[in-house]
Length: 530
Image (tube, rainbow, N blue to C red):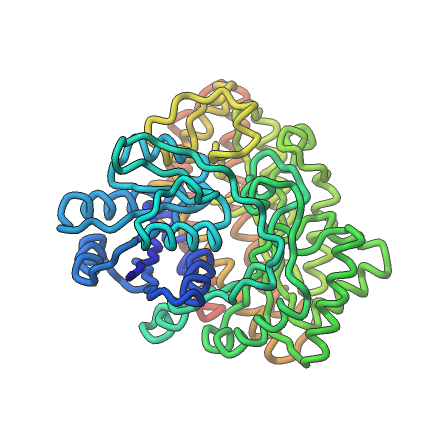
């Protein structure tokens, strides 16, 4: 049985520009499990491999793959469906087609109903479920007893929702992810960002995120690998990270929490890294309350993590308004987030924000203004961050509080209106600028790339703390973002005062964009980025 695991094309140009090339870790984990069971598996990534959808269809047909599985989110779902539909129409012997990922896990029945080309959807974590599905399909057995999947009966056409699969508690028993795409990306000049997953689940019930539900495989607990097992994989990945000249990305929803269990694990993790004399650039996801910066023990842990390579942190900030954060069930006040972010920056550990949700259904102009100023104070007031909007991702609790319209297509994640007409006008104007000008889409990615380049270079030079090069970069960032903040606050003030946006802002826009382009170009020259 030949199996193809595919990461489809990213659908939207701004997402392609913003995020660059990331390895699909889920497919790497699944490939490793299937190979350990003796199956022939090939990994494909349309972006890294440079394939068109037509070329991917041709490769699948010529390769006589028996089963094809796609890992998708809402920006890659359309690409997977197009490839599947062409296989359904043109392949003499259509392969069994499976979709997996957080989006389709909660849109399973709707997608199977609408798209006859899809045979099954794997819900939640997929290593064991897909392995069981492959075993069953290869033996022509019925799928009724495969937990964790939703499938269409090939005889009756009826859709069956099988039981959820219990969370896998034996994470150390799983094979390390296959990194075919990362190695191929180096050879083809398209290096990808490479990562690992250590913890599964999340202890925090933020309503805008489904990490607790999806990564917890429908449970609220957090499962973790042993420190020795995690460090063994990190050691194996060190040569690859040296080749990519990037971070090793740790994709845990929240890598560090203040719990006693996590503190014990972190200290054991540091001990294992130190024992192996292992240190490489790490990028992790944390919260503002992951560390109590007023406690000496937490300061010591931070410095210990910093010494083994934790030099970049994605910090969830979300909003600069208390009431808005209450809506999101984020139990951190903006002033504390700002204080922690600045502290991390002073130690050479801060990176960027893991998320900002400026616009949502009931937000007011005043709240938008607060978030803009909050982001500016952290040096994160890129136009892209400011224009971010809450997404109605399937499976999140926020949907229970949102007056949503019907999803006319399963990848629609903005199916709601703003209750404040002025906010609706502001968002429409901001969205038009976001979509119209390439510099808006490039700014955030470029700034992150420059900062990452500085931090990784400093790390390899053995420089600790907040370097002068970073400080110089941040001074330029402040000037650039002051330009954006001035433009947007003037827009908000006019809307608040008059209820509309006058024609003069078109002239302001035509002045603002060239200034932004000029400043970004100068920054790129100064810091040596093409």
